[in-house]
Length: 229
Image (cartoon, rainbow, N blue to C red; front, side, top):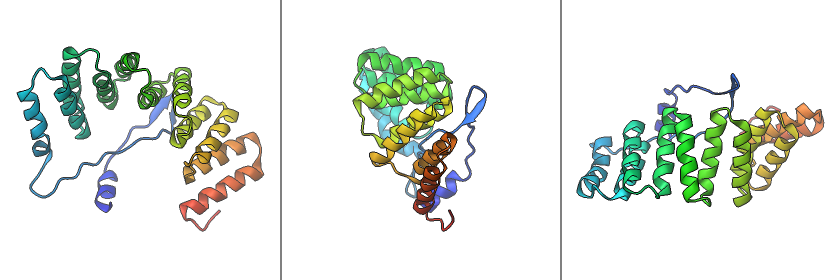
């Protein structure tokens, strides 16, 4: 864990902007580890060999693209997903993979298009709907992002983490009442992290409910392990 933390502390991130203002979003940092004597090229070697052996197998290209993306090689990953799509245009995972690669590069409009195409092939792909909502949010299309969150949460209503993220989006949109409801649902469904209690407190404070806000701040402080309130 310490090695991962030390690595991440050297990274620099650009904030997500919506309507010209920086907004808070959730992300996942992937840190690949290799044992001594191994590196990314060795790790990727069997996947590359599989593609060389089965050049007309779209799944081989999807798998290689996924592993390339895990290694941070978004440009080459996108090329592999495009090859997979050319071989099998009806494979939703190839379109989702392409969307992930393009999103990693910051090409949001093509990423959104790829995800929409994938969802047209597999409308029940709930995780993909959440990713699409995040891409729409990053691109500033808040109303469309809200619609995607609502659709995805209808399919998976007890996902506490997604209720938290949806609450954050609603706060950015200025719908404080709806955000409060989402933060409460997040806590109800097991995502009662310090961040969720803090954001709920912030939303309640905006509504003028200072006592309830203070209570949520206290919960956030206790969960974070701080002696201060």
